[in-house]
Length: 207
Ligand code: C5P
Picture 1 (cartoon, rainbow, N blue to C red):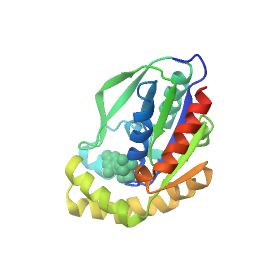
Picture 2: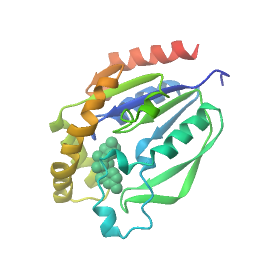
Picture 3: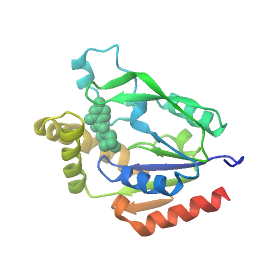
């Protein structure tokens, strides 16, 4: 492990845009080296004190849904090469789990999530800022498949949430953060040229 300051890469983009594929492609290259992924989703505010119905009514696409103070604290700890206890999030019950995961500091920190470019304090910690830009029709198709198969949702609930919350919040809060990106990656992880450019840049910073 290098003694230099770790490299922080922010990967933003709408739900279903392909952030995870971009993250995985970069992770694969550096996994032998030293890389950790921090998912903004895991930093949704703890809602265990609320009734299930109240948790259902929460707007999960609004910046205030996240415990950004804790996320910033954790990134700063990793930058100081200290370990953190990363929260674990449960989408089926819409709150944080009791368990946490011990994360050791690494040379490359990938911070991935819909709104990671929204807060200036987070942006200021990043060396590279990416925005994965994918059309809304592809994003809703991907989201439908994922939320039904992996997050315990019904078709009706996904469509209703998309039209009433996800889409308007995307337009209001997520899309505007594109202007903060150093690089806008169309179509996520399939974009090999963009991934190669990123990998080269990260290697340069690490050296
Ligand atoms: O992985 P992805 O970027 O799609 O995750 C963010 C999405 O997760 C948000 O658009 C939000 O609507 C959704 N979410 C949810 N239920 C929760 C927490 C987040 O549907 N309890």
